[in-house]
Image (cartoon, rainbow over all chains, first blue to last red):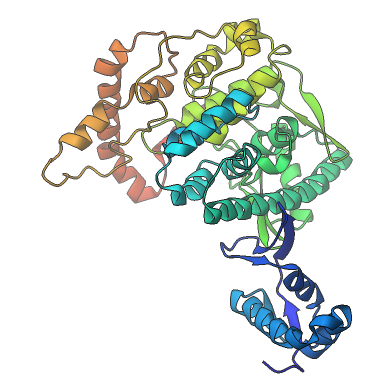
Length: 90
Length: 388
C-alpha cells in the first residue's frame, strides 16, 4: 500500500454500534467486521478525498502519544477493509 | 432442542416465564452454530437475537455476532423499505387511491415493540381492483420496474411485482386487488372487507391496514395455504397471529370470528401447544384447549416435499411412513383442526386420499405444465375469471 493512495468506502457498507461493539457490515453480504475505536475512526475518514497519509496525520494529531504505532495500525486496518471489499483505493 | 428454542421465540410478548423456559432450552442446545441460519429461515433472527440478549442467556460468541449481523441487516432493510413506503403512500394519497397495507409491513409497526424485529421481504398493498392499474402506473413513475398485467383477467391476487433498487437492496412491491388468487376457493377484495380498517402511525404518516378480524383471517389463510405438502410454514407467521390475538384480545369481536372465521380459533388452539397463549386471550376467546398433539412443530417430511427415493438399508418404508403418517401436529394444522377434534377420519381416509389425488394430478397435468408452461391451478383461475 502506498501512503499517497486514497481509500474510498464502497457503497452499501454500514457502521453500527450494537451492545457496545462497533460493527461494519454489508446489507446483503454475510461477512461482518468487528471494529475497535481506531478502526471506526479510520473508516469514517475514508471519504474518497483523504490519502492514507492524511488519515495517519489526523490520527497522530488526535493521539500524539501513540504516533509510533499509528502508521502500522492504519495500514493494517485499511488492508483488512480492502480485503473485506469495504474500501477501494482510488 | 433448537426447534423448541425457535418455537418458543415465535412470540412477541415474551414473559418472565418464557425467559425461564428459554434458559432451560438453551442449556440443552448441542449445536449452537445452526441457530442463526435456522432462525433466519423462520424469519425469527431479530427476535432470537433480542430474547437471548435480554434474557442474558449464555451462547457462543460467534452465534451472538451472527445474530447481531442479521438483526442489523433487517434494521437497515426496514429503514429503506419504510422510506419507500412513505413515498408510495404519499403518491397514492395525491392520486386519491386508498391503500391498505397487508402482512409484514403493517404488522411490524402495529404489533412489534420495534419494527426492525419483524423481517420483511417486500410490501403488500391492497387497493380497489379498479385502481390497481393506476397504482402500478404510479409505482412506475416513482422509478419502479412495474409491468402491467398481460390481460384483464387478474388470475393472480396481485399485479406483477414492482421492483426498484434502493441503497443496495431491491425494494419489491405487490399491488393486490384481492387477498387470494382466483383459483383459491375464497375471495376478498377491498370492497368485501367485513370490518372497518384500522389506522396506525408509521414515523409520522398515517397508514391503514385490515381490521383485526379480517387481518387474523387473512394471516390464518396464509398459513393454511402454506401448511401443505410442498413447503414448510415460517414461525414468524405464528408470532404474527399470536401477537395480534394477544395484543388486541379485548378489542377483537370473537363472536364474529366464531361465526365467520372458525379457522382462526382452531389455529390458535394449535399454536397454544408450543407458544402458550396468555390467560387474557384464553378467557376472552372461545379457544378449545385439548391434549398436546404428538410431534409439535414437526414439519411434513414425506413426498412430494422430499423425493420418493429408497433410503439406505430401509428401502421405501421411511418415506412412505412420512408421507402417509405425518406428525399429528402438522396434520391438524394442514386440515385446520383444533386440538380437541377427532383425527381418525383425516389420518386414515382424507390424508391418504389427498396424497393419492396429488399423485394423480401430477401424472395427468404434468404434460399440461411442460407443454404450455401453465400452472394447472392458474388455468382454473383464468377459466373462473372468464366465466364471470
